[in-house]
Image (cartoon, rainbow, N blue to C red):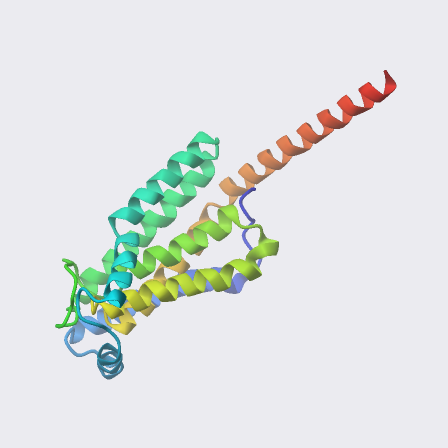
Length: 235
């Protein structure tokens, strides 16, 4: 299992730069009228459509995602980084740290630029601004990181539908507890995915080096095994 190489598509790199810039631009647009941005009608409609009282079964299901995207998720990320270091994949660990740190940096920048209040009927404790959603950005970034480091490219057709479903579930969970408006979660997910892709491109030489070293080690092991088998047969 080795890091995947960055695709040669210029479109992917362009989007990884353009999407975060667009979200930050939207944050400035929101700043002009944080309580009623141009798309507030859509957000009000969706906010009235989803949600359930605190303590209900669906609210508790949403709370699981709240913890997954919060402190518990950070602990899992730290454990993953330690495991990568233990198996001598420090380059992959650097990518994980860089992707998550950059995602938080861009997301927090958007929050401070927009200063958008959260829905008034929020049913969970939280202390930051609404736009964009930090939980949504983290889960989207993690989905990309997993694809880069652990899912062979030939299996991406199976991974991406699951990753998209998981990200959408996180977005819905944040909407369900009225912790975010719909557009907060859309902007967050787009930010996390794009930033993780950009950091993949930025650290591609490091990850390519890890892949080359690991593939070389596998070939050496295979050659040594073949030579050993041949020696046994000759004897």
